[in-house]
Length: 313
Picture 1 (spheres, rainbow, N blue to C red):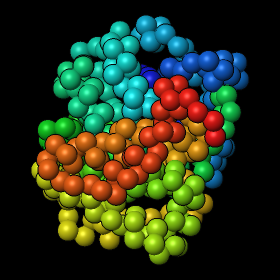
Picture 2 (picture 1 turned 120 degrees about the vertical axis):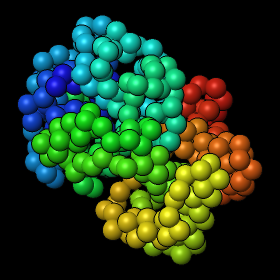
Picture 3 (picture 1 turned 90 degrees about the vertical axis):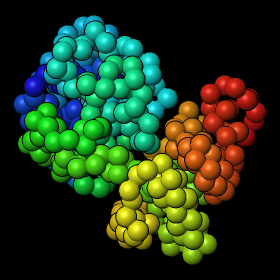
């Protein structure tokens, strides 16, 4: 398959890298020093599962140069999805499949509205990784996992092809019978991890080891579960306890990408994680006081990172 990775940062770079290593025809859309490093030296991936360098057939900042794609993996940050959707239109053929791997729960609907629902499947990934430098991705922990599923919850040949491609590349891959539940389940643990991690500046193990912080974490997860159910997402009764056990087994020094961005003073996904919980809860009349506190507390740093509210720290 000809696979275009639109946004070749940590997630896009890792999964695009393993797909290229497995023999897929992968094109990377990147920019700046990261792009120039990939063009000059290939994309380097360091991982507990084995280090490698992949030399893509094409790496560019111009989607029109990529040509028609069978699959477009969307790896940009959540606030960049709308612009990415407009920019990827030259790569769309009649059967092109667009797979968002963003955090949060809103990217599939945004892409479907811009590109047509027939082009978009739901997707998510689980991995702890980061950009270590230009042209260099570092996989820090977690079993690399990709989950895809049709937005109408039907089985399809194209989602099975995607599953097989990721599986051949070495990722744990599955087709979800209900991708909306899968997206909200990831959101349920990631938004609290991101927000409380940015506030405490602590890794996941430390947050869960402190009883008071652990209690906040569980309360934040319970708020998301309540919002999801009010929006018609059929989460199971034990979803909070199940994902607390999952996090207890995560690498204790793990941090979330939003957490790292806020701590470093970079623009983050605050509005599509903590902010989205508050906004989506308000729409269905579900109070979210923990997330409202997280969002309000982090908002000055987010506005500073975006140049809206300059102040010294």
